[in-house]
Image (cartoon, rainbow, N blue to C red; front, top):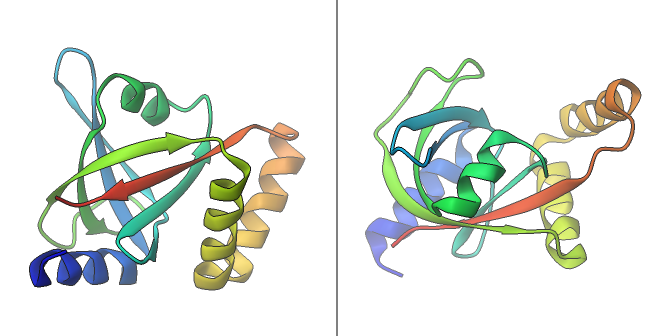
Length: 131
């Protein structure tokens, strides 16, 4: 990993929200603000298995990332990355642990609210690496 990549991972990992841009089959970009936590050389995102971003990632693993606010307004420059969707229990445990440590009560409240509103949706972990 280069110093620049490490600096970008640090910048994105420190942000409360990250704009995750995925791409439709026709190439159009779709940006979504997400929570992202850093571990070693990757960022981890937690999302519902049936979400649009997961469907798009199954067709194109290329992503753009930038720090943003909760509404998706960018607060820095984009960087390119590659995403891998995983439903492996160890990856789900990893992202849950990372998000619980970073977002604390907000993460636990979000999970509880989600269970109350949507039942027990299936979640996946998304590992994002930078070139």
